Image (cartoon, rainbow, N blue to C red):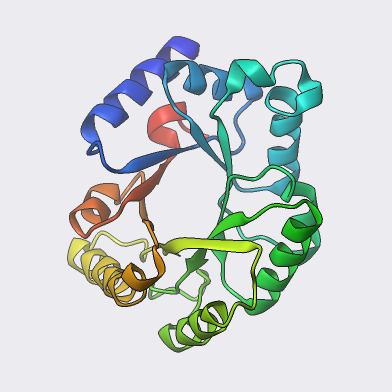
Length: 227
């Protein structure tokens, strides 16, 4: 398994442009898969479930794991929907929270970050897909969040940019339109606020996303194999 993960990571990293960060989506995969990905050069790992994220952190990068020095630079990303009552479990160590889609979640992240004397990096999730199963802020809701951010409402939250997931469809033109719309919102709000991350694109559509300006893609099966 280890050798295949290393080979697949090298293939993905060679194809994704150098300026685009690759988050290796390790959800449902064992700790050994994360170790293999790290050995191959991956540094950002995405997990969907809080408990799984905590378990892997405790096994590899927690100070009491006995191995934190071996995994220097590894960053844990919470990529799935995050419930407010789960923030406290990842607040001490999470590297980036991807799917922030409500002010109440920002309230909780700010509270927990302050308790740990941290500034937790997050991405604001926009609803860009023509699917009710996907979540995110509307453009009007984004305007409201940004206004409150500018007023200093969440001082321990560090917004780094936007993220969104396109419709699951074979219509590449529709996917490109959705990504282009998100890019426009990023260009509208980001430059004045020092944002540096536009996360869009997964295993099936990352090439379209990169063409539309993505700076971060999330790739799982192409690295770790099918779940």
